[in-house]
Image (cartoon, rainbow over the protein chains, first blue to last red):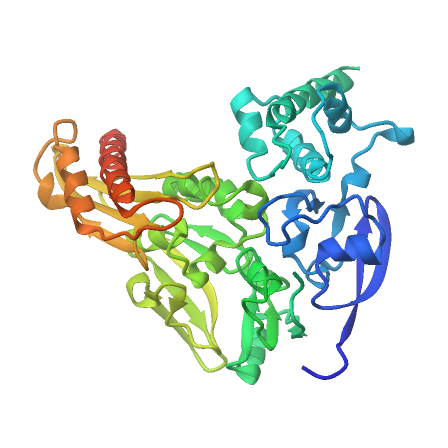
Length: 166
Length: 291
């Protein structure tokens, strides 16, 4: 290692807006979003890929932002929980479902659940109860509010279907 | 929980990547999906001086399914292999097994080749590669070589790859003849590391009698174990074979260890039950194969 750490300019399209910052290669995507872009909706829990709180969508697919260097995904499109809302600041269908079903208690894990479920419902718009459980198996809730989170997945699927039917 | 500093390299071709690896060897480490490496970096259990990020090597982002094998390039994500319909058509075992590899979020970034190069004895794909007698292709600045899975895995988390080599692809051969293959495992929660997992391949002859039966295991030893259990069932018809005897034979040959997740006794019990079940299912699949 040289005494001065090399810096890289990283540009991402975050929630539809191009954003850049100059960072060392070891800057994790989670920290890039929170510290460099000041998008603190993405939460950082375990920082080794177990808890799922930091999940964001990269090019539409959910990934653990704590297991990715920002420089690796330079140029990618990223959706964070801030990008999961509806038009005009309304709640998005997943957020609304969490509100309807009391799907959050302390709320720390919620951003990871919202992004994970948003991507899941894109591919599986009508999950069964079992499928809803499996969809969130990679996310931990220390309040253990899983029953209501499963209900939220199913409710979000209903809300999306209603929206599509309008 | 932040990685130590490293010198970052971002090659765009395989030639560039192996040139960089040669230049910095033995201080270089390859970064692909990062789902095993980055946790080690975050916890500072590893602190390589040079990181060679291969995420721009789009020439390695492929899944090629032929009649007799599926070859996976080093930048194909688990999710890409899992979703590949052509690969599923010739070797359904890959998709069936990948559904047990961590969670979809991890499979979106983690690569199949990376998990094999990492050689974690709890990694399902290492066992599948060993079970099928697959091969691993490595490139260095000087040469390319292909080695068998048996030669590639040299111990827990260790392989025969040199510091200057990049694993560019792995090849899973399609088992010959009238065969069926099944993966099954027990984990505390779907997607967690298996307490015990087994993949089985059963081959039947033209009269639907058992001609071959073998099983590979994860979390049952320091490296992928492949056992031939044909002796317990050879010549029996697929629906009357004593699969439980084959399960007992396999379990008796394994020597797992106690850890925080399970005792060795429990693991041995699981191996017997899961092997019996997976062999029976594999035989049923083989019987359904059009002659």
